[in-house]
Amino acid sequence: MSRRILLGVTGGIAAYKAAALTSALVQRGDDVTVILSDGAREFIGIATFAALTRKPVYSSLWDEPEKIPHISLVREADVLAIVPATANIIAKLARGIADDLLSDAALAARIPILIAPAMNDAMYEHPATRENLATLEARGVTIVEPGTGFLAEREFGVGRLAEQDDIIAALDGLFERGRDLQGEHVLITAGPTREAIDPVRFMSNAASGSTGIELAREALARGAEVDLILGPTWLQAPRDARVAHVVSAQEMYAATLARAESADFAIASAAVSDWRPRNALEQKAKKFDGPSRLELERTPDILAALGERKRGGFLLGFAAETENHEANAREKLRSKHLDAIVVNDVTAGAGFGEGDNELVLLWGESEREALGRASKRRLARRLWDAMLHLRARS
Image (cartoon, rainbow, N blue to C red; front, side, top):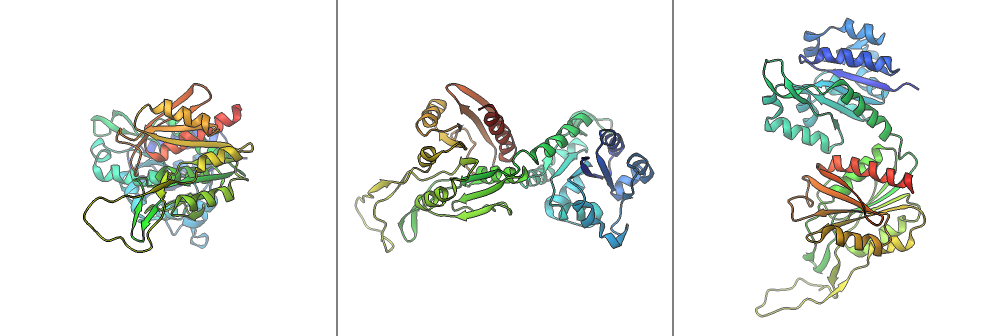
């Protein structure tokens, strides 16, 4: 069955390379439909793409208006690829602006989106463009980074459209990810927990839940059904996940164990409080002079309980460490009967919050894979690739 690609071409000198890409995709057997922006038409004509695809080429909201093209085109496609993507279309997509056929289609798309930026290095490195790309990546858009080389302005810098083979490889990856978790049930815990001291105070940590949310988003993109057990966070959960909002470690324990039996993958990325006040006060404690004492007790160990109940599914734990990182993580791997564990150094300027992270995956007696430092969205993709590879080997 041919893959249906909706190709958006925007107005830059690299638009001519989109014709070569279209030819290569068609020769591979892909079904390609093209949208040209007004700017793209200044560089390359409709007739070129019509001849390559043997299909109508669209450039206006008023092309075949009875079909409502910005809706019908994305519903008839498996992926939307924008090659080249100018700074203008990137800004539109990031801000939700829909003022032409391509930006309208992108806003209506419930299919994977890939963009390959191409522009002058000054535009590419501008803080606004970097922020817009980060926004799109956080939403799950695949970005094929531009290369460094000779630019249209007869300058040398970053912003040159990625090589055709790299764009096709990224498209292949999107299609493969769309199938490899089809029919699987994924259970993910994410975010912090809060343990009440009194009605207005609590013990907690700085976790945001962003890693677990990105893992859930990636699992959904690959076709899985996802249960996300989410502690208190300001971040938005993926729309298609089944989300259970919890506050305390006890609530997370109950919600997780209730859903664990049918899980093909259980991923414990939440930063669960290890301790809670033994007796939370019913009324707000008042300030007073002199020493105070807070008596604590252990919270339930969610990861250990999952390990004890594991019946063939893949169980992944997380270890946020400040010293003896891999040694501590390997002890956790063994003692809690995990299939693998992810470790990171939270003192190295990565980990908690929405920024980049740097992860190492450990399994077996001594095996490891460094996943590198990257955005949490990219790390989620790498981690799912690694987990599926490990499961296939077992």
